[in-house]
Length: 475
Ligand code: NAD
Image (cartoon, rainbow, N blue to C red; front, side):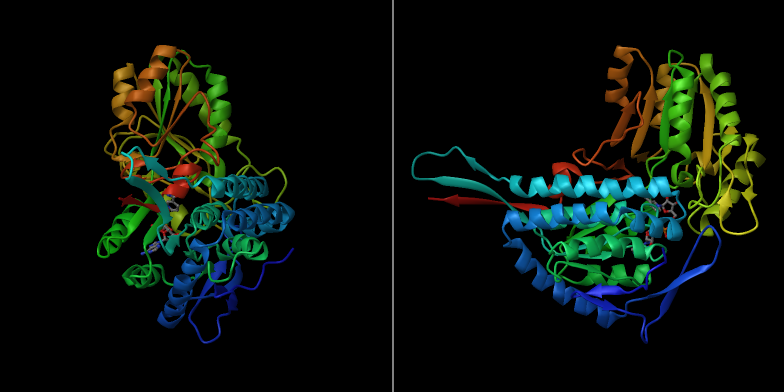
């Protein structure tokens, strides 16, 4: 299987590099060039905007059966093309083939769910005296500008496209320049399933140029962004200039509370896979392990032993558990974070170094007894590092979980029913897993609180975030 020719998709037309600037897409396992990606200029973006405006008028009036048929059809095509799309994602992002296949299936189940939701975009009628009628109508918000990052090169574009299409919006997707072919493959499935060419488009470019240009246009009525908190804050300010609605899925610093009554073996089995998935480049990754004293040493030593044996290699190879990091910025960031933590007094149990002589590999790393002032305890590391510290009481553990301004995903391991209820109430997070790592599904809202953003993707909430309400009062 080869890597496809890269292009943008504007008004259904594949736009090649031509005279435009280009970005070289790299294979993170080898550092080799995969292809040249065209970067949009202002004229490309203006054309995409005009098309999106037409697309919105067309799609908001499309019957639910038509929208549902597109989403269900795209789900079928994704399944048929699963191997090809997973291969592309591994080539350009580095994750293992098994993970990339799961990502295709994430989109399949999400599109199937949204296909059903097309028929359930209800409003409501209010109780009024005879002769009066008041109705609350839900309407699609308008053309959406959606910016998706590279870490889930298939899943993120699927979320960004699926919800607006279900709601009756048009969408201009700017997926990450690092992993464009995966996003194009997802859009292709939708177009091949009958999505009008004006409704779903894909542009690439210099991110700040594209977002400034699109968000400056009154045509765009909603911004949907997944990425870092810093960039998210910047984009929210741009969106505020035109009072655009926003869905922001930003960074996290996943707290994991492991209590004395937990089954340590079970927790280790679940948490290692979760920690090292996609080389830790996951916004909901477990990061700060807040472990009660009674099981602390056993947990830390067990974690380090297993992490040291984790199989790292090219994601295309059979048996590999963790691929490279997605781009050269990530191992550099790991070196900075881990070096500073060790200098500050943290204990390094395993890892803490790059692997191999090519590509962007970094070893699964375990640190313990890390000072809370170390940068890695306060900023999202977005890499294969587990931070393990001991705590005495439940109150101290909850306080540590809530110490940071992030609140995306948190995990807790305990068999005490009363404590489970207290945690569900006290942990400041958008998503909480108790005794599991299965973090929702197509029907569950996915999103954060505080600096992890606002609004949800997936679930009915994901569709409603692409709609506005209108109250109509008739006499
Ligand atoms: P970054 O913040 O520069 O970029 C993150 C994503 O945002 C990329 O896809 C990028 O193309 C996009 N982006 C950047 N500036 C933009 C702009 N002005 N307008 C529109 N899009 C823009 O950082 P990075 O080096 O690519 O990733 C590093 C950090 O980003 C990580 O440490 C992590 O905190 C965060 N991140 C979060 C997620 C997530 O799922 N929440 C995903 C990827 C990256």
